[in-house]
Length: 122
Image 1 (cartoon, rainbow, N blue to C red):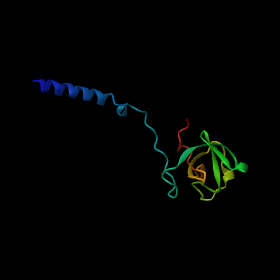
Image 2 (image 1 turned 180 degrees about the horizontal axis):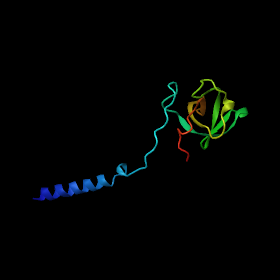
Image 3 (image 1 turned 180 degrees about the vertical axis):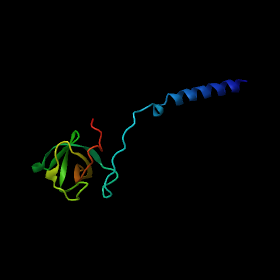
Image 4 (image 1 turned 90 degrees about the vertical axis):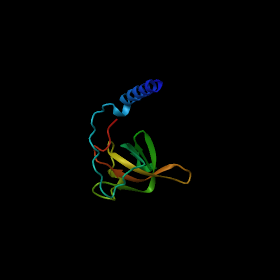
């Protein structure tokens, strides 16, 4: 008799937790991300919008952070693998490939221009 009561309590508690799970909360549908060119990486070390650059000092601002640029940084666009770093403007969505220099500081070695709607604006 007690096992039935215990079983019922456990079942009700489990059902309550399951129903209140945030994973089951209704979320507005999101549009799928646009597909990237085949030669693009499937993941990036960082993504964000270009906010500015100081090319003479070898720096770029993406999101809220400034990054040092490798002297041989490559800029990739959906149309070309060898775009000019000077073509990057504020507001352009990019993915970054970042490596560490000898001192352990992050350095951007590749910039991948992303489709306009690839990143949700914050």
